[in-house]
Length: 272
Image (cartoon, rainbow, N blue to C red; front, top):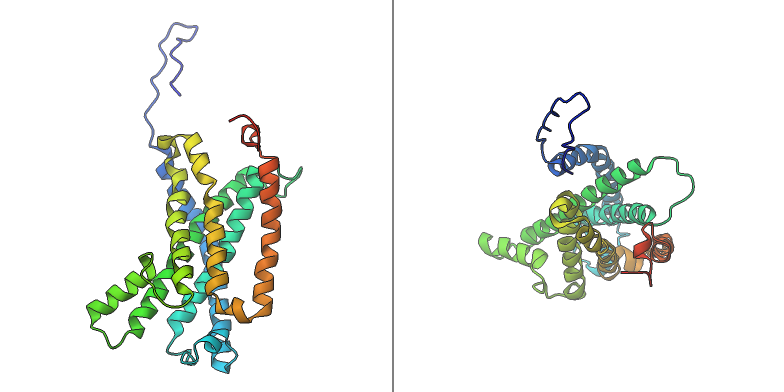
């Protein structure tokens, strides 16, 4: 907004407005700082999941070993277990940030224990944490592939690990032929869609809002990836049941968001 150029009543000229720093980079830096406690909590959850997966593999009660019997040594396959742990915590944080986003974009409850501004900050910080967890999940999966391919030269091992993890369509084994591209799609959509908020002044608020709606696609791809590739979901009844039950509040809030959005213009069947 341009400063008001109308001179005051005493006839003196108004002081020119000082050019400040661009707001968005400051917001990103402040959100990164605000995300540190959230990220620390995510690391604690990831560590707890890793300990659980490690103990189950060591005891022989691991769904991963049931599918791949050669992976019965948690000391050797610790990077794979850590990748799984980051995947589970990433999915949990994705669930949380989607729930916050749907709560903010819908009518919302009449009374909330915290302010809307606080919820918006939580939504942004959990989104940043989710992106970091997703990347850690993929990076450790690639590292495990590099470690596993001992018969190849180092250059070939690095390329194989990178391509199988990050190049769509390259992974050619089992359900991973579908599950891996789904996970890649979630990661490659999550990063730009999550960071577009910080450049919304350049692309326009309307464009940002339209693109931001596709964040729910990231979540759907993440859940689909887990259902197809998560060995704990295949054989573990309680992980599978819990995963499905967590989708019920998401579905309810999504329905409310579509039928009673906070912005009337976004209502289904409303004016475009």
